[in-house]
Amino acid sequence: MKCINCGTDNKLKDRTANQGRCLKCNHPFVFEPTTMGTVKITDPMFTKVINDISANNTLFFTPKQLLYFLDSRLRKKSFQSLGFVGSYLFLNIWCTVFFSNMIFGSRLWLMGNLVYQICVAIYLFNQTNSPKLNNASRKSSARFLQIIGGLILVIGIFASMFVVQSFIIFVIIIVIGIFSIFWGTEQLGKVDQLKQEFLISPTQLQEWLNRWEQINNVPEKILPSPRQEITPATINPDVTAYSFDRLVVCDSANIAKLLIANNFHFENNCAILSITGYPQSIFNTTMEMLRRNPDLKVYAIHDCSSKGVSLVHHLRTSEKWFLNSNVAIIDLGLLPRQIIASQGKMFTRFSSQLKDEAKKLSVDIRLTLTAEELAWLDTGNFVELESFTPQKLIQVLRHGISGSLNLESDDSSIILIGDSGINSGNDIYMVESFG
Image 1 (cartoon, one colour):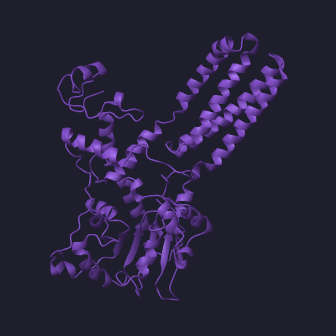
Image 2 (image 1 turned 180 degrees about the horizontal axis):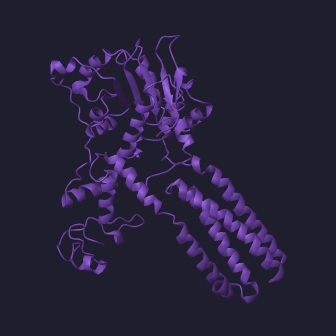
Image 3 (image 1 turned 90 degrees about the vertical axis):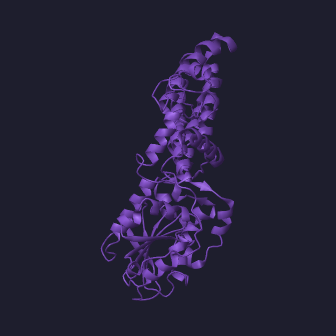
């Protein structure tokens, strides 16, 4: 493992002999991959993860975004297609030539190979259901299951009929091959609906960050939790005389703080608030400024959950926000239809609490969703905005704002989903895709 301080490559015996420090510069290593079990991280890898999520130290990010990003990097290594093919071919020959002769004898050498094929099929089937793999790896496992089923049928039938000439083995081969193809096909259609779990826990990541801070200092662009600032901030009257053309409302203070820290409000001439009232010190003043603009456009961005899909309805019906106002509200997502359209590319999780909350959604909110979207929410599924990198979130917001500059145009990506009366102007729009 290379030292991130001086670049010296330290072998395990070097690190062990020097109490976990670099042999050349004596800089301590944060991680020791040989003692980490199934999840292995090195100091250079962690450094690259921090650099990549922060876009080379130019963007702030939240601890949960780091958790998702690191988990994604680790998850990609969980099932390597090329590595599996090599191992499968090697063990296929070994089991046929050596294992079969020892257990079954030379006359029934095919039986040993069939035992191996059954074990491989069971392994691949379990991989297609594993919440520790991403959808790409689970789909690869399902396709390999189909391929192996086909090979068993083609090669096995030939061997059973013309080499060992056994009807019993012929029947066994037919059963194993057909079931492998069936399982692979069935699982391939289910993969996008399966839940995912973190390979590492938030507590474990925090422990790593604490040790990283002790040795290498805190990552410069990682954000602490938002603070409650009840006392109103003093703002120059000359500033409050103006207003904003756009407002971005987030369903969490974490996302609002992320956008503000990355100067999204300056670069896109918009105000940023959370539905919880963050930042509290300027919330009331900002709302007063916003209400002075009759052409204000409001952009809602939220988690894909029962709580998240309620955000727009809350904005339209709350006195604190835009009740009896004619502002246009554009729902950028995340929406269930966007998750479904992504075909399993987003990190989908499950919550029994959100499952119960989904069934309590008001009629007005449920009418804006399709039956497929409601079924998705009713099962307790959710996707968090923090599963996306800061760069991706900023890109989506910019795309949504630029695509809504003229809502009367033929832009098929933004559709009207509801209004409060003919020519009332109280329109709610929805973006069909996320980014």
